Length: 398
Image (cartoon, rainbow, N blue to C red):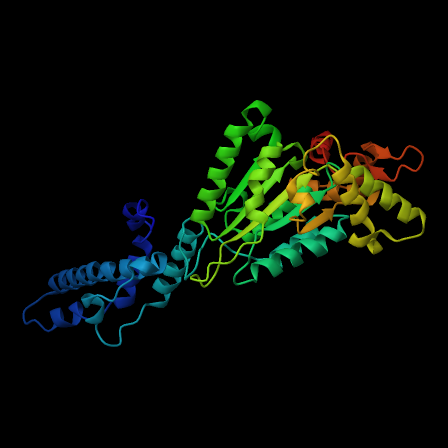
């Protein structure tokens, strides 16, 4: 239970107490003072003020109890003072509104809610909306990712972690989707206590220290799982992970007998982000486009066989040779398609909007034209996807 912020919150409760004083005015002191013989206007005013201060002081304890009961429900207990509260007493409307606002504000950055783990939001409506509106040119990811995650988290007792492996060229949206998942599954997104991001070349740069990395990674994952019943682990540049690290992940992805003593089992999602297989995806998409297929009609079944074969055959990465792939422990390989000119324009539009900058249609064309397109003859796909779009916006700053 969070304790630190409590002493400072009395300042925020002042408007609430003022509202209380106004709401309770006329209930006790002024009428009694007026009945005293020989009292003048000044004495009656003093008596009224004294009574209102007494009521406000008493109410402050009650309002603090109400606020604490909302913020820290596990500490909420029915006390004698609350039981002895005058019959028919009700919270004034202004005080109720302020209490609601204050509680919402406090809970926006503290661990408090009506029940369950407040760090976990599982906003699938928001996830689907983000993928539909903010992610461009990736209809397969838009379909596969929310369906797989929703189905997995609906299981009362999953027998393994969910493993999704994102593959495609740089700039096609793999990291973007990982961030959307974190933002919609957890209140604090990637900063959540329940989320861990590992970047191969940053967190595990030296192969000679693989044993130390393996021990550290195992500890990090165990501690995170102990803190949270639902965890998300993201492995960026997964193709560069040391074989020992990949082997350390295997126990999380193997089938395990669920704990029969628990109503629900812990849930873990592992995301692997990799450029591995990007060339094969591009070649297959280009072949289908030339054969007359619409881009949005391309299916996972048409891409996955060649993608998996490429991953397994790769000699530049240990990922395809790991037990994770060979033992079919990856639940879904999600292809990220190469982006076209029209998708780059949409990325440029989003970049302008995110920086609240005005733009014209010709500005979007100018930025999209700056990108390099391949193959050399057709020039269909952006070689960098939407990467570096934000930097190019700087050319349009006044």
